[in-house]
Length: 286
Image 1 (cartoon, rainbow, N blue to C red):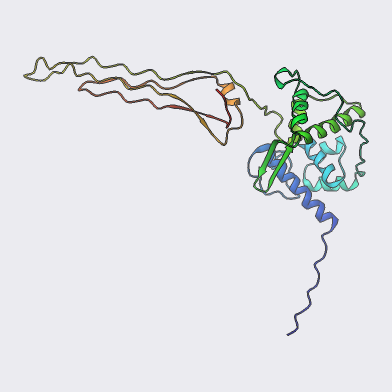
Image 2: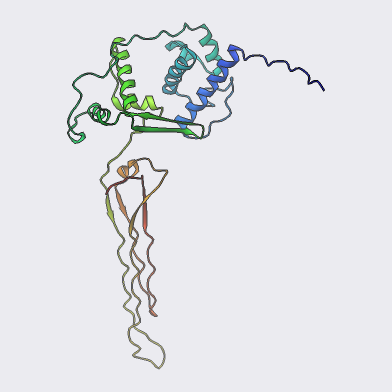
């Protein structure tokens, strides 16, 4: 029996393709900046009220539109658009992005030759790593189950050189290194990475013993019957997969466990206090 001929599906229109890609850019950006499952994003979703896209996130979105769609908005348009549909309309009228000719294309000569402990800048630390293992993964970015990317030391240096060359050529001052790196990896710029902290911890004190003597009718000298005090809680550092750095410890450096409960009469010992468990990232050295 002859099979009926199928009509080939119509190719996706450029407008529909741009809309789909823009909505995906917005979805990823919302996940990165708000660290939560994004709401249903549609062309008429409001950037501020529905998606929480602030002025800084708009700048990042504009850069991603230029990379993915080949066009970007000027400052006035970027501030005026209120929905993805308005972004699409403005992008259609925007001129195509032009590639910037880079002045610096390779790593400068005279790279830092000392040890990381002697480095005075993050760039010198990066030089040290690139000279020894440029293909080693430096950062793994996990946006969600479908978006996992890596960044090696060598690729980080190449991208940083290209970005700095473009800024210098445009006559712009270089922004702070942490902010530039934070903008590149797509994290919230206010989230600094803390890899060192000074903390003050104290285990719990043992509970007081009870000075009690047994007393009941016809036993005037029953003897002591006070219970011992309970043990104080210990300090336990426990590796937790959800902890990325030591920022919480740095913000709250004073930690102490609870004291043990006091003993009671009738030889009843005091209860042991709970241990204080402090979550830390994997690889923490005390």
